[in-house]
Structures are given as C-alpha cells and as structure tokens.
Image 1 (cartoon, rainbow, N blue to C red):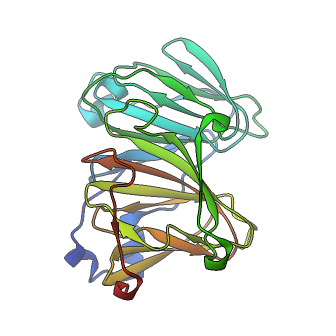
Image 2: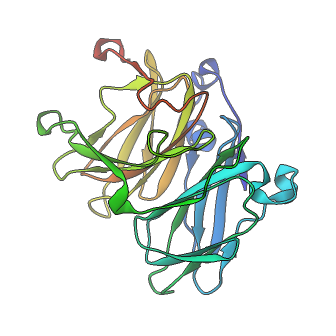
Length: 277
C-alpha cells in the first residue's frame, strides 16, 4: 500500500507535471494476481485494485492500520470492472457479475476475492473509508443502481450517473460510490465544474473508446487549475478544495468515490465558468 499525503492549495501551486503526478495519480490499479492500494491522508480513504487470477486474494492491513483486521473500524465498497468474479464475505459466497458492486459494513472480518475465469479475470475496484457504526452488508447490482441522465450533446457532456452507494437508498457511515458513463460523441464530465469542501473524491478512469484515448483531468482551485493526463484504468485523488472534471479524446467511463463531512450528494459549490483559470 502506497501512502499519499494531503497538500494545501499553496503547495500544489509550485508543483511541476512530475510532482502533480507523483502526489495525486495512481498510475497502476490492476495487476494480475495482486492487490494494489493507495492510502490518502485526504479523509483517510484507501482505494485501489484487487485482481485475482488463479488464487483468491484478501486485503490484510491489520499492522498498517493498527487494528486486528482490515474492516475493524472501516467500511468497504467495490465495483467489478472485469470478468465474472466471486466474493466470499465472512463465509457468504456470492457471484459478482461485471459492473456489479457491493457495500461491506464495518466489523466484517474476511472479504475474499476470486475470478471465475483466469483468462478473463475479475477486476475489483475497492474503496474503504473510516467508519463508526456497522451498517448492513449489501450486494449492489448494476441493474438496480440509481441511473441519473445528465448533460446534453450540445455541451458534449451527455452521460448517465449510476449511483451504487448513496445515502438516499441505504445507510453508510460516509462512503459514497458510483459509476458514470459518457455517451458516444461526448467527452466532458462534471462540467460546469464544482467543488465540495465537505468531501474529497477519487476518480478511476476506464472503458476508453480506443487504446489511444486519453483523458485530461483538471484539479486545483478554480482560479488556479492544474491538469493530469490519464491512461485507461488510472485513478486520481481530488482534495476537497479542488475542482474535479475531465475531457477525453473520445467517450469513456469513470468510477467516483467520496467521503468526508456529509453524505448530501447535491451539497456542492458551483464554479462560474468565468472564474476558471
């Protein structure tokens, strides 16, 4: 597990391209047969990829977190973006189809990930945040997610937001998580831009239209923005003071995850387009 520290807006004002990538980008998420995680001091979120192939994989972070087991004081969400998988949660074995997700409550002792077909392995994108109470573990099928059409073709931001972990339909301590898909011919996400000082957010970009597709992700304060170029299946951390939006060379999808002070999805501060610099 790699640790990323928190930074003030004044810090990143002086960062060059390499420094921005070093501090905010997770370049590799999925590695066959491995678990790759990042611990960010922004609201102490842990995120990354679990990619089982021939053997089951389990996240073990007791010593790293100073606890008896990983989820002793944490909750967990994940979405499968690979082939068909299997997850066993404290002995309960479930099949996880592509794009299906799960919420796992605090106090769960064992979460074991497997792939059904090693030629087409599952890819579990996992996000964990600190928790104070145990809420029910729940399977989150893609077909049952809250689908919110957004944007329009004229502004090249026509997309559908699929909300998996959302306070309007289920209880969590602070974690929110979802999957946004841009329609063909659209390239902008989360534009017009906004910030939400009460929450930080991570984006995992994936499902690019072609192998040569790239996304330019914008972050920083509205009056002093920075950008990072991302390849498929890379993730970026957005501090709570930062805008978080991107534009791609074709359409794409991304998984977003938030945690922080509240769970009000619409609690955001819109940025006037004239204020972007």
